[in-house]
Picture 1 (spheres, one colour):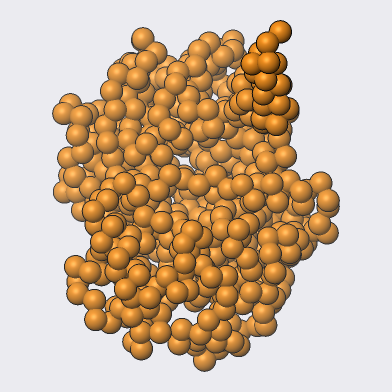
Picture 2 (cartoon, rainbow, N blue to C red; picture 1 turned 180 degrees about the horizontal axis):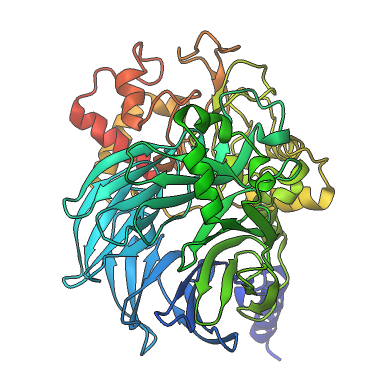
Length: 596
């Protein structure tokens, strides 16, 4: 054997010893389907289940309770609507900023239509010619012309619009603004918002449905008591959970009914389904892993008895719904129920269980679990997936009133509210911060009262009324330590503008406190924004990553937009030298900030 051959063998063996194993040798990460929405065919015999985690739609035969197919769709799908003839399925691609049009005969995506950023809920017009999409990032509703395949126009609404429903006579669209405590009511014929209806202390608004006569709208949401210090979770004094009923014939009208019980919360209401006869409303309680069945006539009787002066007291009553027999609650058959669909053809209530990758079939009258259908082969939960479940799980909370997601949404970002937390004294409310950056930009909290993510996650569990359990703590750390960020749609929108904005950012000395790559120096600073009620003037410097979706801004949420920070809340240039910026320079700076 020659010397050259020996050298080659030694080098090869050495490379095997020191090289990391190839990606092919690593076990593949499980792909969880995470079913989030169910649409039924017109005859109710086929169900189309939107799987957010696997970018697919599962096809179910409802009668035989079998999975009969699966269709790949766009990135991070959120919702869907079936055409009246049952031939097409319109699926929103939240990360793809588009709607996928699926041909249900060939089971393929036939085409897609671009939307504004972050499309979630979708709804078809009565004639099937227009698709309405609620675009959570852009804060708009798109009117998509299905004939031309283009967006006809968009209508600005509130913050983080999630779902949209049409009245049967097509005279109104009802849009739930997830972070605005309101619904936007649109006249689709004119493409204008005719009313923004405030819903008191409603927060994290989710699905909306309308009655068959077009008079009533039902909205699922939390009730968040950010008006008081967070000292008592009992009786729903931090978060309670329920529905609001809106009389669409009476401007400004709403009545909130809580689905909680005196000693047991109904955390994180999400999905809704209304029976054809309008007598039963089904509500998924995503954090409680339950479904509530609401007696609609009984609920409307209570609504008719409620005068304007009684609306607020009723929204705090966690006993009346149970006392008057208006609602019953049952196990959902899985973990993290989101969407509901009622098949009149088979007499089944279908429930999409996000964290157990299953669809359960319930008796729509008794709530009995008839069957549970896995959407794929069983998979063991990774530590990260367990943490994601725990983050959304109100079973960690004393009496089940709320979950981590009740203040930070399911994506660990923000709820848009100011909270008076006792960890830094009372009487100085602070805006809820996104948790996506705690892992690599400590400390946590505006007052920097938590040294790092480990301390913050322990404190979060205590805020739920739980003693941190090591297994749960590790799982939550795994989830929050490797956050799943939505792709930033602003990053590639205008590269030349972003490049100019980066230069403005540096000239204005913003990078002194917000240096790349994490865009914070992890120190406390006084930028002259302390209010009289604040106990300290030096506050933690937040990371600017993802700031395009974390409004309102500043420690007390006083700036509704990024522009307001510099035009209205930086008089002495202590928060960057921005007073001399021209309008064009400011626009460039804002585009850069949105791209981070």
